Image (cartoon, rainbow, N blue to C red; front, side, top):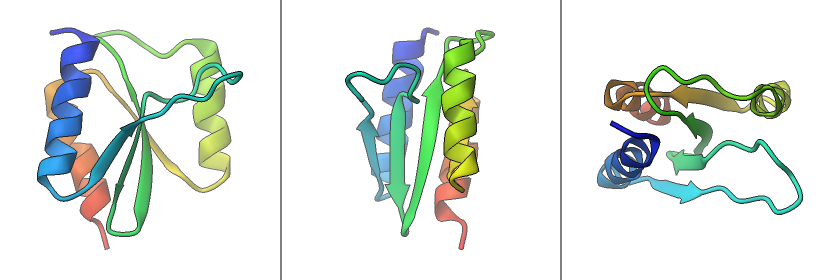
Length: 92
């Protein structure tokens, strides 16, 4: 299982639940999470990794910046982790 496969399954699962799962690209700003998932007035940032891989230091920094602004962020490295994102999007 590679990162690209996990990312595609995340997108499919979020969209199947009625949400949006956009690729996040920020020219000039490195380390931003791969995806922003939106549903039910919630926006969650998701960094997708291959199984067992960890974010780079700049990615941890960006995640910290987002969390300091009150955003939920997830780092996922398996298909099973997708459910946690879906649960957070569905939370009231």
